[in-house]
Image: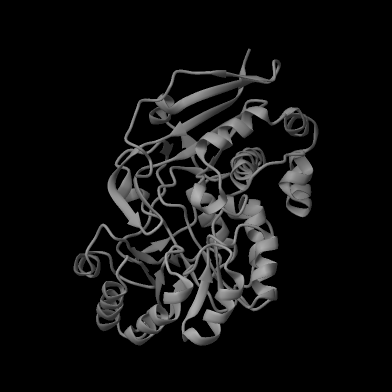
Length: 401
């Protein structure tokens, strides 16, 4: 029987480690799904992080095996693709396809379906997401987008400043030493002057008792933003901190759903949202969060999961090109992390200018190559409706230490 879906569990060793307060990462940890219908394939990806949404690759894999996909394939076979895409953008992926589950399961399936529809219709990635956001004053739709640079705990500030420019927006991953973080901010500010925004990402590592003094240290050193300073969902404490800190607050781990966004606005808990495709349940739900942010005067960043390996990279970039008024855009570091990638052509960043250009081609512009094959773990035949195991992927070091 022909395989209509193949799931890959990709735990690919990273050439360079990435460290921050919530996790240390030495390998990728993604699920990549290829759907095939009437000879056309689409690929999707999710990158679950337990400390963000409570999901893991194990839990998403189990949820996928329990999810009936008959309605999904029936719609792909039976409804004209242009009408199906329009309805999905208007009503939502989960609602149209009858899928329930966590944000990463929805993202995995939605990105695969959107990619497949894009190939059928000859539409590029940004066109799949729907209406564009405001673009006045931020360049033509196809103009390159500047991206932020991230100073994580695996690199010194001196090496970062010497090798990672030019700089448009700098994110500094916090350590367990506020004085070290303040020194990093001062060094970046002294090197770059006042024209480049600087944000410290605390990844939920501060306490209510230390938050205000930490914020003042970073403010005095020259930081503009702090990202997710307190434990997830500390709405009242975030509101109180924002009133006194002298820094703008961006939410990330606390912002997974539209309900979270509403709560944040009601609590006056933040100035900006970090929008990430997998965390927020797929590109269409992420786009709705952007619309909500604009309506309520909240800035937003297009962020990434560390160590995305394929479709998530171009889905996030498509979101950025569709919404060019983002405060900043993260490009990820797949070019540094993975000498060999499981997709072709490999997503690129112009490191001479630290900018992105739109991905060429239809859908998300990527196909799986031979390097993906060892990571395939499950296959689904539409006629049987059941998944069967494939050869287990090669072992690697743990994804998060």
